[in-house]
Image 1: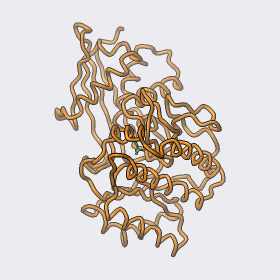
Image 2: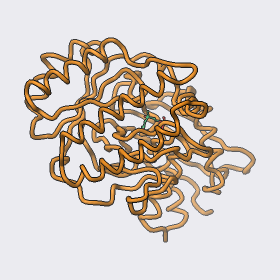
Image 3: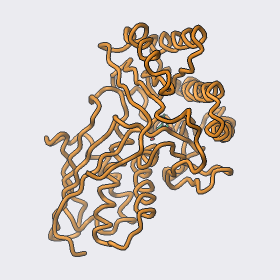
Image 4: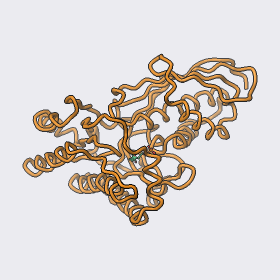
Length: 347
Ligand code: PMV
């Protein structure tokens, strides 16, 4: 190839699953389909610098975090590059520098692997496009999502907005296990600018890596029923996205979050990833919803933090509630206000 050196920069958002991905087959193929809100403010910004090198014997790269050398993620990135090499044959021709920054506080317990892998996959696709300028936009974004999936499964949902489906589902046209697609059908106005306030309950190191978590589903007594249920919940959600029925939305989303944690509590070994304050928050959300009829609900990742989800129309009232009743349960009172977003952008 002909490019001697240069750089590309992308920002890619985090995402929050509504139907959860938990369990995989080989090669980062999900055991069940999932759907997520793409976030808007929680992002990784990655700059990929490349310089042509002498020989093609090795994959060569340096990692920087906010401009400073940081080797922590070297094995993870090495493994990622090895996995995607067969899809990007030019990788060994360059010496790369990968410089990353996050818009959210590090060690906040917010997973940066989805946004991070998505941003890196996009930078690499920009280089591929520079080498093959005829590439269509559709191909570009699909392959970016395909590559991101090989870095971290949920990362394939961090390329596009606003609702992204990953995993084959009968009634969703174009859905595939290989990459995420924007939800292809009509979405009710109730979901426009949907809000996600992330309450930082516990910022400690993750107790269970998602790699281990997915593996625990292999010997899991309830796995098969769970995978079926995810299909059913995605079908239900699809109808809800069209109708705008927020009561039904809340039921599916909260049940998915608790099911994810139920899977961890019933695996061997077993884990409880919620903290007492997680339960205090859930309980307070339920009381508030009962008293006010305001359609606010929660979801969880594989950790103790709580994502509070609500329509833009009730944002003022919910934020007041969060400040009055929930901030006290957050570590150092920390929370992040985000909302549904449109996906990654070149910079
Ligand atoms: O992308 P991974 O392998 O880190 O798995 C993410 C799993 C959950 O965040 C718990 C659920 C999801 O669908 O994002």
